[in-house]
Length: 105
Length: 261
Figure 1 (cartoon, rainbow over the protein chains, first blue to last red):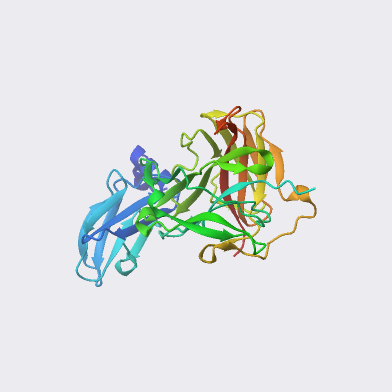
Figure 2: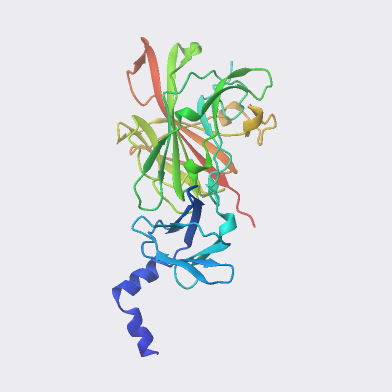
């Protein structure tokens, strides 16, 4: 048994995360019409996505904006002038990527 | 002898579980959903709104009265037409993930055959994106059917449960009518699909009459894909409207989906 991994799993925070992430990650975004975009996240059991990292990348994969879901499980950012995609990073197996071209008002 | 058809307030939209945000069209028709032959004329609804909730967030109520469009709706017999309403709320009303409970409080309808009025508080619950919200919460209506199972996520062959409330309290042994929406509404054509999906072998199968149990709970099976309506009748004993009896009813719509690849 890998001792280090076992220790890493024991802290309560890690256990909570494991419970939440047993469910599907869901994220969707809309264009507010004022040059800002709002993305909302959550889990299929109704669990909040508070603190889940969100990254906005350009076409080449360069990080344009980096942040995290708010207490309301959403994230608002200025609409990039270039092609972009939004990555909701709920951890391994729970990453949702949304193409900026699919984000409507 | 005429068939004992049940009156049902329709609050119809084609999809109950949307993969992603979209504008949600609604048809508001007072009908008999199993045969939909005769459609009753509606007055202007007293209230029409949606209560949305994403996950554990705060519920958000949006008034929809401004989106009511008066129309004439045709019954499936192709001859009778009656006043009804459509609504096309814009996409930004339903662009967040979560549950949306549409609520209609129609004007009381005068039923001449029984010399009484009928008013059906009606709810249709849909979901966007799969994040649940307030589908199981009472909305504080005078009468309502509160789901015990998600109304938008039901497999054919499963069961659906709900509890009947009047003034927030369960109604033991409430009188219930259940109907299958046999003729699909065609929103743009303002009529029902003349082709029904099933045929009743005998009149007792058009409207399934059941009772809630002693705790006010209802359970129905879902043998066929599509919308099913549960109507709890006359939940306010002694209610009157313009000097006549008023049956204050609660209706809930739920959708069953085929299990397939």
